[in-house]
Image (cartoon, rainbow, N blue to C red; front, side, top):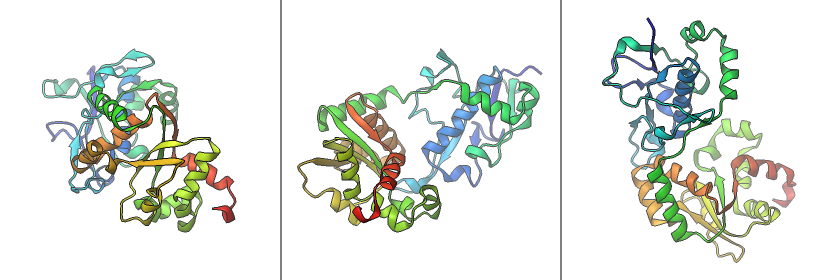
Length: 291
């Protein structure tokens, strides 16, 4: 049988839905990694990938409801490019002849999507060789045009001609032993790392002032939040909940808010995007008695 399409998931679903304990426990960034892997498998095997529907966990939502999505409301598959060339995918498999579909198994593994040895039989490389080929590919999948347009309107309305964006993870990350291992910091040190005094030091070190858009899971009942909101002539920290349009999105779909925040952070007028890894590196360089 010569297959034309490739997909992951269970044939019992009308759409290819990936479900397992681990797959249903993650958010948009992890699920994007799964979808990307499906697309790259299709590219390497010269088949058209069928985009799977994945479970976005409700624990990241205010309403706590899970969401099943193929992520098309966030990403524009029509603009997908690999190696600089347009690459087609299928988002609706209702008209696809299942006999022409290579259905791959999935299991828990790297990026929550394991390796199916059917691929090795077709691609004629072992798992390590396929992964190496993945990393060589120039992959481009932009956010939806409507999302970008809405974000640009917010930038024009609420931000100065130049601003800084910064990612500050507190919430579950502050309490996570796994996160303490990742950053090699105790809970108290991680707390200090994400406090406003340390963030101000980093901004000053980089000669950044003015509006600072904060992408964070920090809530108003976190005592660190009030520290960020104290009046300061140097910095104006702006959180999503202070922007009416973003706050409304957050109530409905926190994953869409995550996308909007990234568009704002990557805007041409954003002077610099400061990630958690940058904060960690600068924090380690500073002596503890000065924090």
